Image (cartoon, rainbow, N blue to C red; front, side, top):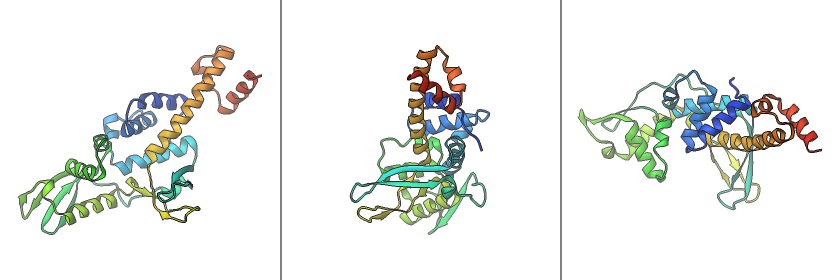
Amino acid sequence: MRSLTAPELLGAWEAGHPHAGPGRVLALLCAAFPDTQPEELARLPVGTRDALLLAVREGTFGPRVVGLVPCPSCGERVELAFEVGDIRVTPEAPPARALEVVRAGYAVRFRLPDSRDLASLPGLDADRARQWLLGRCVLEANREGAAVSVAELPGEVVLAVAEAMELADPQARVELATACPACRRAWQPVFDIGEFFWREVEAWAQRTLHEVHVLARAYGWSEERILAMSPWKRQCYLEMAAG
């Protein structure tokens, strides 16, 4: 299980901060797997990528995940608490580079979405985003041997492709069974490990930079020396610096 050290976390946070979600996820993965080319990580199917993120998050911050989600009915903030292992999905086999669906006289070859595809989505609503992803991921489509465009595919064929994508890359979409204690509304919010992990890293980085600032002013130590300390030892010095 790969974990990120304090200097690696700060480096990933600094590298990912100017980017949107997919770029931040790649910054975390690049820090965790420095021997793998960024382009290779960017081409990983979303579920494969997220499985790696789960492992890195578990190694870095532990297996317990706790967060809050607003109830869609009454707005009450509902706590979600679970173990990383509870949402880890192990596919029967690694996803193929190209998949095929044959339905209603249509044959569609396609690949699974990756971080490059997600990075192209900001600003698009849900319907346009699905159509955009389909257009990027479909490699070939034909009807009775004649080539057709993605826009010509009927709804049932598009749905079959989407279902095949989810089946081949199950970790890409994680839904959590949730119920609101205030209004008893039951729903299944989507859990995005990339967004959740990044928020944890950002909160950690802000706390850590403050600690470095306090100790550097108090003792004249470098950032490198302070980050090399264990969190427990650093806290001891912080308490002494506070007097």
